[in-house]
Amino acid sequence: LEEAAFQLQQIFRIDISIALNILGIESMRAGHYRIAYTCFKLAADRGYSKAQFNVGLCYEHGRGTEKDLEKAAFYYCHAARSCHPMAQYRYARYLLCHRPENEWDRHQKAVTFLEQAAMAGITEAQAFLGVFYMRGLQPKEKRGLEYLLLAAKNGDAQSRYHVGVCYEKGLGVQQNLAEAMRHYQQSAAAGNRNARERLRV
Image (tube, rainbow, N blue to C red; front, side, top):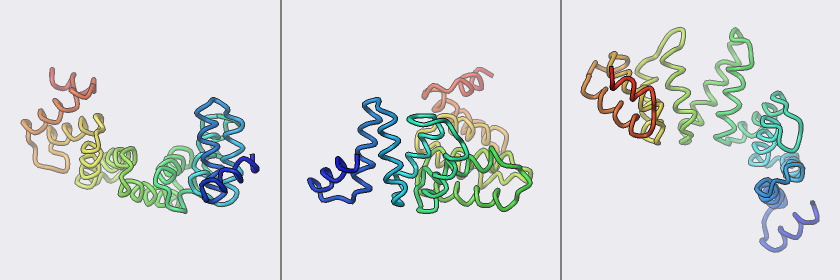
């Protein structure tokens, strides 16, 4: 694999880690998961954040290696620290969903990573933060609505539905049933069942 990566590097004059990651992606597409994992791992161990993220995916989904969420989180963490937006989102989700809630520093770290990912344009992070701020122990409705609107503008039908709920109930914004209907209609048109049900009501 390293020889193949070296050849690719010579042809395209790219870094060996990038070459290994490309070989990993092509192997994954071809269904050769073990080879893909090996390529990603070689590049990840050289500090390449995209490969670290890909190793995390392999461990999270059990592709080419055993399924192991802690190892996935380890690689997501390394990639997140190198400002890989999707790794920031996945690592933050891990911290919030698989760690005790009373660990305040982990909670704060997760929120920081989520906000960085959301600002980098990761729709999943925007949607997650929107709901997170709406449903927290001390809800921050205006802030939650801002993130829901960002995710909705990026095409997330569920977030568009949540924006409709905000306008219907006056959460973080002045109550406006006409605006709520508009958001429900857009969400329903994108296939959201909850929005269709809300429109019937």
